[in-house]
Amino acid sequence: DTGVSQDPRHKITKRGQNVTFRCDPISEHNRLYWYRQTLGQGPEFLTYFQNEAQLEKSRLLSDRFSAERPKGSFSTLEIQRTEQGDSAMYLCASSLLGGTGNEQFFGPGTRLTVL
Amino acid sequence: RKEVEQDPGPFNVPEGATVAFNCTYSNSASQSFFWYRQDCRKEPKLLMSVYSSGNEDGRFTAQLNRASQYISLLIRDSKLSDSATYLCVVSDNGSSNTGKLIFGQGTTLQVKP
Image 1: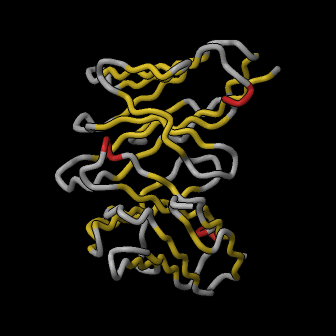
Image 2: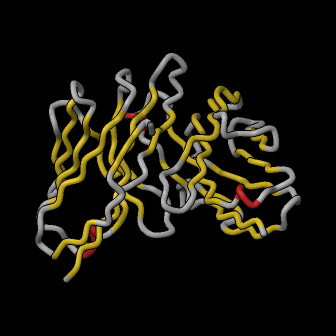
């Protein structure tokens, strides 16, 4: 499968714990995005990488959140001291800068439940 | 006010019906527009891009009215398999040119036999 992959698919954690999610984009894609989706809402933008550079962060990304893309390939999203309000689906998407219409391809998401 | 607004529905229609979804966006500088489809507990997938001239893909027709900042999606001869949430999406191609997507809340469609 050459699509976007995310790991884990599901994560249940207790409040206050740290969690880390991984995203592997489509191999030739230089743009990578993280979004968060809560029930009944559309995805909301969290952050954007072009190659290894993090070029934009949403105000939704509090200081408990950090994202990296160290080699311009896979990316990680870490949430420290999780809160119940962090429960959501975390979606990763990738695209090719200069590609047709900026179509973004989404991974299956990581569903986080904070107890 | 949300940047992209949609009626969440649900829209319950019989097979074969024609159904239309509408969406408005607030940023007049937006450059790219899309409809994404999302099945229950799955990731969003691109249904079609939306152009000012309007575009059609089989039973699906999308229209963009830049003056009114309004986007529409028409589904003709609806099928049971069309049941899903349809997300209106605008790409922020502003000064940062990150291409990030701004999603509406989504409109739920349920096609019944």
